[in-house]
Image (tube, rainbow, N blue to C red; front, side, top):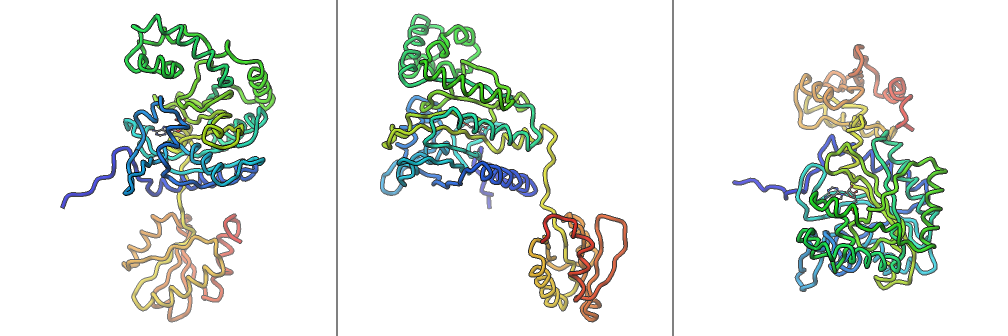
Length: 428
Ligand code: AMP
């Protein structure tokens, strides 16, 4: 029979790689909790309309990349292409935003029908942080400071912050007009995509990667020249806060981001270590989105990074992959040994719940079980054969140092393990 293939661009996360994911997830969880952010979990599937109205009809994501289908009732649903829209929808529909502020984080898979390559997948994973109800720029600075702390904690320094402000919707209207006025007489120099966008969403043209349009785009008007005074002040206060925090950034007036809902602050962390997929983390303010989705006008800002890309960058920066090592591997040779071995091991787990103990399952000779013990990465093998059962004792064999086996009585096993594990933090 033919094998069933996985879907292109949708990978499996396998051990031992999954240990690195777990370590990253737990580091992030602890860090975000320490900053006072709370976890929110929202569905992977939402009404298509949510993404059309939030991300914007004239964006790559909505035009080309969404996994959209009808359910059995004919309702149009979409696998989430990002997490922000779902969080905002949840905030509104659960009444979390009425005269309240929320600092939230979430993580999980997102789906985009992009052309898969290294660092670009169709199912990938985002970590997402949102601060709802804050006008900033203090919270803008905090969100960036958090990202900076994450890179530091992972030993990543090949990463740069690009920063820009998009102003208010009103100042953007003026800027869009300036762009239209600039591109209209040069329509012949635009590629087909950009011609399409000229009247629907001219800011998208600035996102184009087409090398033939590079110099045309380089000479286009800068958004910075169209900012309203309040946005200008908001932006310069953010810059000052970042200066004080010692976080370097590069002002990039061409950074407009691929999603429609952004206002004022936008930023992106980029690296040159990951080839063409250099965008690691991006975020920005979306002060109009909540009202646009039917809630009360509420300022908000958030960021998201792709876990795959961050882990790639971590490895590229020399970060070691943690292994899911065991502390103990239990070698139990002979059928009659199994019952008392299980009993002893379960007692050990009761006494030491944090010890990582793997029981040999699937039988095997002493030699083959010892090989498995070695491969498991365990510090010790506990050895139980018929002789040990008869004398109510257990063999302890250190696997990572060149010392011989000792035998102890079952009653003194717990005490004997102190010698090997007391210094380890994972014990109580
Ligand atoms: P975006 O929502 O497009 O701003 O993306 C946020 C982050 O998700 C990016 O900075 C990347 O780290 C990551 N990302 C975006 N698209 C992909 C993809 N197709 N595959 C893997 N990671 C992605």
